[in-house]
Length: 324
Length: 300
Image 1 (cartoon, each protein chain N blue to C red):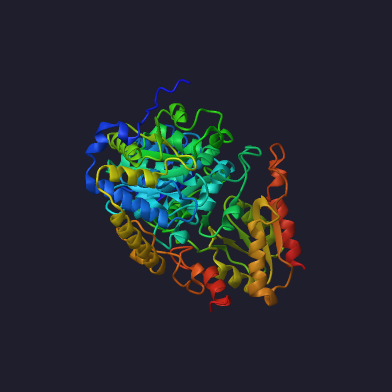
Image 2: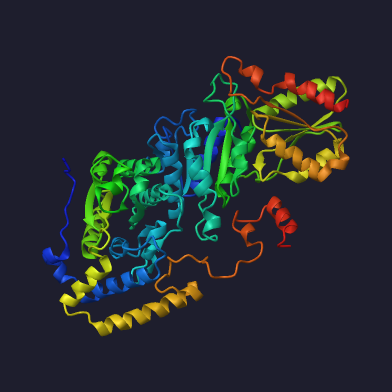
């Protein structure tokens, strides 16, 4: 067991799996000698060399497109996209090719890989270094989407993702890359995909969150407790396929739901989560489900703390839901 | 026009070495081209020499990334290079071929990738991105661009003098070849394959199709076989009958395509679709939401 931050935990997972499985390679812009824009791949180039930790030309479509070919060859590529905001040139390759290869070849040519990308705001990144595009990928058949909130889960989920037979989008909340610290077991372990984590038990309101916003939900829940409201918080961890059983079980207990995410509200993942709860637990609801999200605007630079769904915006939503 | 990487290939009657091509190879190429034409769905017509001449240059360790019109590559009977599932989106698959070839190079494995596309695809960013990666990584890949003849065919897509010249900017070899001439294609692609296998990187081949009514590739090869006394009206009649029955048999039972050990897709039109089968193979295992949707669909 070691104290690590999220960057160290992800690095540890990559190193462990690259030692364990010779097929695993890392590629992307400046992932090699430089160690990545956030230093997540630091030291890997020194240990594994430039045939397994590969600096590529600046082209996200080329990185993912060639990674698909590498996967067809039998390697397990882990492309890094420097910021999720830059992933759109690769969106076509991910959506049209990667997500559909298994299906269109009747299972003959699956292409397994983990596409890693930092997501989210709160680091003064401005509109092109702050976005959270998870719902654009959740909407696409054939992809899995993961977003850890802490070092323990980041390592275990990444190891599970690399070993998963399907393509995984692994979104890393950069606001807590170094701020989130915790005990990380030495050596090999996995956190299973598709399982949420119960962060806090409570009987009044269910709060769903993931990534960096989990900490805001916890802070809001602490304040709500001072008013006698006990929140139950689920860290979804795997966004798709989501742990619908855990969500429904919690809402059946509390009858009240608040969903928190950084991405814009309209057609964000919160909309799907609330639809699922309506389908499966409608008669147990005591109040209309509420979303606390980013706004339907581009991500602002100077006023990013007004844009993010921080504890100060989550708390009133919890209180209103609890007292409905 | 300055074209330092251009290699002009003469038609077979002007090149000495074609006379030395074994009879069996010449006859096999002819049979494969006639078969490809018989299986033709329109867009493959007159690409037979470009597609099968290329396929014949490949080895068992190689991979072929077809375009929809280049499915004939999977009909090449003896050297079943592995044929990868077709993407109908123009140009996305060029990067896949480059990536696969790059992986082979990194792992010091035998294997060269051959990828087909058309002149229109050269306008796309996917073409540029993939060939740029091919140049930078020295991936053993052959990018085969099949181009209609005449300036007007490419004028809407590019202001350059054809396609092969673009190779110069990517630091790879560029070759233009007459796509009516299967021996010329075979020669060019064999050389490109040898370069790739020797670590000399990629080649962009511009295979220029004959114009309507001129130099049909199948007829041209038949005339050549006749000139070598390898062909006759009787053999032509026999082949026509063979090919017709093979096409009919394949249409009825696509799993029986000859020489497809690793190449032919397992899922073929012609089989009855299993109700609800489209839920399978989205993921390796059916996740809860698809299980639920399947149960509530008409496939229940």
